[in-house]
Length: 183
Image (tube, rainbow, N blue to C red):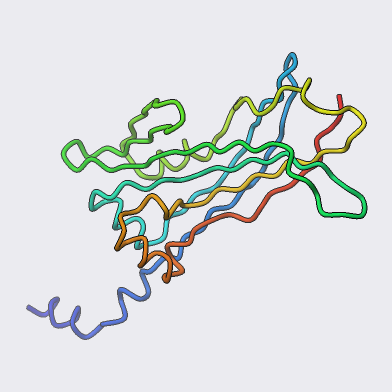
C-alpha cells in the first residue's frame, strides 16, 4: 500500500521517462564494384517513447531510407539526378515476443529477440546497390545524400493525424551529404 501511495505522490514520473527519440546518420560511403556503386551506411535509430509503446501494442512502424544523387551546380540549386527509397516495416509479435523487420522492397523478413537488435540491424546498410556508373556523366560533379525517417503516412488515419501534431512522432535524421569520388 505504501508503494502505491508513493507512486501517486510522483505524477511527473511519466514525464521524466518520455524519450523524444532520434534518427542520426553516423556515416555513409559508396564503393564502386564493377560498374555499380554500392552504398554502406550506419544509422542510429532510437524510437520515441510513444512510438515504442505503439510498436509494443501491435502497431507496425515503417522506416524509410532515402538516398539521392545530386548534380552539383555552381550558380544554381543542385539537381536531383536519381533517388533510391528503401522501406522497412518494424513489427512486434506479442505471442512470440519477437521483433520482425521486413524489407518492404524485397519482402525479406528477419526476426529479433530485442528492439535494440532490430534497430541495430536496420541501421547497418551494407552493399546496397545504388546506381550504375555508366549512367553518370564523367564531366559532372555529383554529391550523394542520405536520411532516414519514420513514415507516418503508413499509420492508420486517426493516428496519422495525431502524429502530424506531435513532435515525438516526427522522427527523422538530417541529410548526410558527401561528394561522389570520380573513379
